[in-house]
Length: 329
Image 1 (spheres, rainbow, N blue to C red):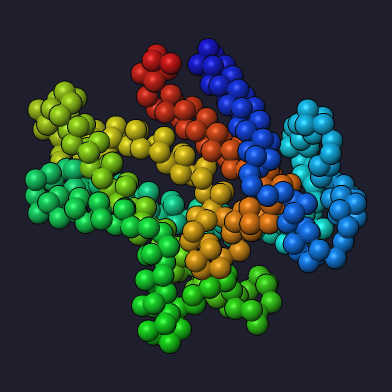
Image 2: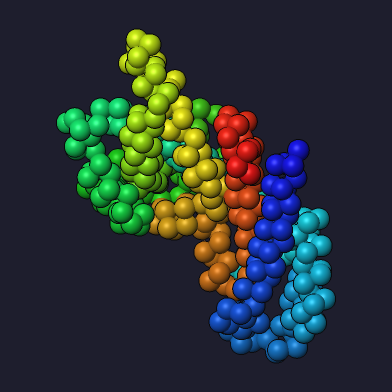
């Protein structure tokens, strides 16, 4: 019970600190919504008219910051996230996020899970056969792939599989513009086809980290006494590798995976930008470009809550799987 209360207290404190930073950081950024709106209207409206427009959208630039902060905290908790004052002027923030969220969860979420599972499996085999041919080839290869920039890999895949092959795979958007969204196999197939290149970009650039981490964890775990005991009992290599070594080597990876799952909701911003994919990452990019405070704050809040919840759940899972974690906490 003490472990649970400490973790929940840490979650609440961290969430409050993150929300406070979320309020102040956009206001210290260069530019302002007023300047962005003036540029968008090409200076045809007076400052007073622009102020009235911003106030009608729920942004009150001349109100006391402390009052704004209290209103902001209340709105974040109750889900009253306001109206977009950026390129999507007048659209409810909740509507914009609701439209983009499924695409990010589908693309980045599945790609992250695939990269974690594939990386953990490859790392397990490489660590088990340390010093062999597989172990001598894989680490250098995945060190290179994990250091490649998202945008470079994305552009390379577009060049090879879209430009050089005359559009074999789509290079942008989430489905063909001449299709109507509907629950049908042709539409689902088209969505999957559009997700191949951005999904492959995420997997290629992230799988290396999981391989190297799992491989190193396996090498360390194989030196433990309980693994030697398993060998002394005459257990099969497969049972020792999976039940004794991989099961324990996986525990440190769970924290990193929890953070990766939490970051899924933020989307791979560069990937979505390169492929013009309408997810939350691309939505955040446009919000920053247009000084859209309500949209920025709602997105940052969602990203923070997602990461903190994922880490909190991971702490509980690790404590359940490994009683030693409860004692250390």
